[in-house]
Image 1 (cartoon, rainbow over the protein chains, first blue to last red):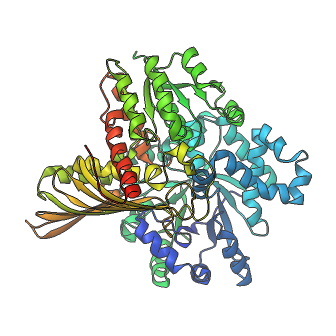
Image 2 (cartoon, chains in turn brown, cyan):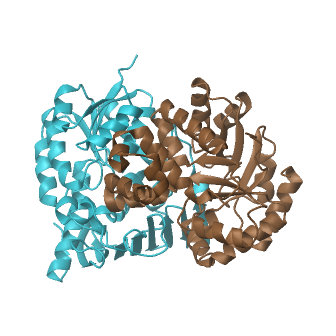
Image 3 (cartoon, chains in turn purple, red):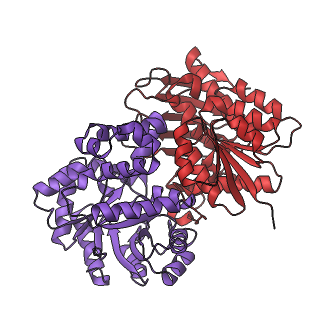
Length: 293
Length: 339
């Protein structure tokens, strides 16, 4: 398993209506990319500009995007970084049908797929009794979409990482790491809003040199408990970082954002979202200049 | 060393799990027990939190554990009964919003706290969102003068078919989008502008059969402000719930959402905008929003220092009165005064 990840990864938030700057921006994004071909155009432009990695959550549009990416002949040029699960989808489902309803709905495809029938004799009632088996199945279902694609690392969504961290669920992290390594032979990785606490906990639990996706930006946005503490941990611990929110969700000017980012050690990669050709050119040219290859 | 606060959680749904995570991370707090009637929850938390004792009966948990605080995060119709059990045993409690399914129910609970020193709080978490607290500071600061006219909404894309679960059964939830979601908007408006004196409400079910999916109400405040609120969970392209409040003042205007606060003052004829990035402060642990961490810390701090929480059951009762009045008004098709 090669743990080198691509230095620039195209993010997916703009395609699925996520903006940490504002919901107004997010809604405009949904309108712009409601024609999925426009999303694939952006992926193509980015690929032409030397971007070789793409992050994609398991949002229901992910499959459509991947199908079009394959049709356009882009799948060989790109490595994928799934972000699982699509947490907001789960939250909405819990609001709609409750936690038990959510489990039943997620497990539906498992009940129907022959593959899972073979893997889990005894079916859903068995899964309900064994929490770890349940988690394995959830992960495998989430990753079905990516079966035919070149996956480099799999990121656990920050909502789940941070919940596991808050509960100090060492065993669950161990399970996730083993399952991803053994079954997918790729790098298990973690999104978080709590970089400092996560890296310290991993160190205590003996999890060596984790790959962590966390916010790093000049204004300390989404850097908990503080920018200063995150910088200290980055300096003192052995960790690989995929930086997100590098412009504090569009709040900072790219030049200011990247100047700060590339002054930090151990930033292996950066995930950025672009919405137009002009935006892509500005972003990637600057990133190439600052060190992203 | 200061005594550790022992916490118990009743109801391990979405909010119960969230609060368990936060409390487990706060300095000086220890989650010692959880109660949920679903046995799968016991199973899951058996793996994740092996040292926490699990109960299927919350009363048994309250009787057997030495708890300083209890978080009640169950369907709304169970809140009051569970809070009463806490009061009987002298245990401080936090209840998720809304407090109850009707003002009558909430009133009984308030009477029950008379003469008891039990710290209590209701989960109106928007008070801990940076942009809203900044807006409150600007409104109270007085530079904008008296508030005159209000337009406001709260939307999310959630319900486009008949829902299942307690949220869509009036008996369990107290109502639909107004009771479950727009209670946040009513809360923020009361917090900003004080008491409401009358409402003229309209509700519309469409996807849901028992509860409303849309609500609209004209509101008149004691301080002279008037205007409307509109809310729905069946509006497209709102991935996350969003509040938007715009107020015209005597000497300016102000708009606030979760993302920014924007204001204009006639004195200097200038628009000012503060984004959440400008106001951001880190927290010990962020699981799905810093406001929940601040909310829990505030409650723990009140309990430790034996001081009452501002967002107590009496405040929540006032929110409930406005919600009930909107339902009453919609049913009788005319405006309703709030005493």
